[in-house]
Image 1 (cartoon, one colour):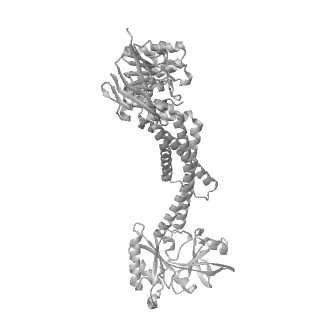
Image 2: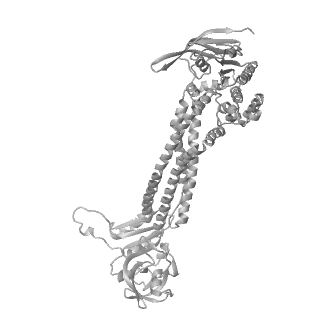
Image 3: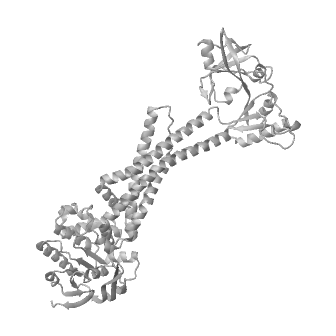
Length: 399
Length: 226
């Protein structure tokens, strides 16, 4: 039997039972639409979260002081943690593959300009800050002094600070007070909005050495290392660890690679997407029951026809194929309809609520369609087997 | 060419064994015109199903063209049915969703014959049976006689050697019935073996050979001169 004939034969039964076939297909369509819609939102959320987390750039490794571990006996002298210093940062700067090293610490201070005062976040950073992180300077630029104690009192301010303190005036070259000290404003950051609850626009950036003094902290809170994108994170991590152990005598620091953190985050989000897909899968199951019902009815109704086919020389396998493909095609068409509905609703939602991230990966669409076909096959197997195994004589005389 | 040797067929109804065919020995030659008659329950339908390979003997042997077909598997039996046997039924058994032409085409579709070849053959048959202008009609748009002609066209489309007709005129009025019968008898000229099951004595008497059945046995087997 040719495929074309198979399709002609099966479609003739859809055309005869239009309404019934449509409703059965709709059952599958709703299931597939639910899966597609939920995964689209899940995947959109996934991408949104990843973008949120990786907006500083992805090839960054952070070194933080201290190591969480439990030791037997008295920790003693070995339990002490050597602080992270600017010298450590300098040492890392000389490593292979390393592009920029940003010593960093954070605190709060009062900032003032011409009688206006505001309490804000003070970020002690390095001069290459805007190069290492994907944060752009709107006007001016970062200071160019080396990251050491001699760094001059220069500041880059967030866009909100510019608005609040300078009221829209050009702040470049102006002197403002940060924690009582005079700083010259050399740059204004582009507005970035909130990042994980930190308003990066409501902040001032000053050289790390100055921040340590200002915030009265003896050491850095972290050293961020950006490395060449073509080098695996593990290689750079190994180099950093070796150099730091060399300097500190032992591993009294923690290395966090953004790449690794993103991997963990990504796998968590994958599980969420999968879970919502599974939820949609329940409605697919209901659709499958619909197919099973309709095919069981079809076999009963067309018993005489099955007998005839056998009399005309159809093999058991051909009868099986006929009914299986009917179930499969019904389900596949329902699946396609579901894809259209699912993607349609997802895109419609996105139009209505632009803030809602929506993304339909082709792989999911393809998987959904394959699932629909598989469900059709699975639901069709039992009725089709029954049809194939009918006794031709009895079948012929069924009315 | 068709030979049944000691064929028995018993059915189990409830916990009782009912014998539909008891020790049948029968030989049909190629090109013969045979009628099988008998009251209902005499086993004539079972005999026809047996001849058409739709049913398997409980015991005994069925030889078709010299080969034993009673122990072929499903696929082989389907092949024999497809290539050597044509069926015509009392209730026509047309597929209601398909057009007349598609119904005639059906056996060739199952046999996997290419579309062009099928089209030519269907057209030829529809022409021969006076159905050319009914090709695209669905069965419910056809008269009883036309339906049975479509069914005969379908039964002969694969050029079978045996045509098995089960009360082919049973659902037709007298005139149409005679027309259909003439059509079937016309096939004898092409060397087909025609087996006709009927309980109409007038029709049964037209065959060269009349077999009367009773209680699963052949009661008489008469050849008529001419």
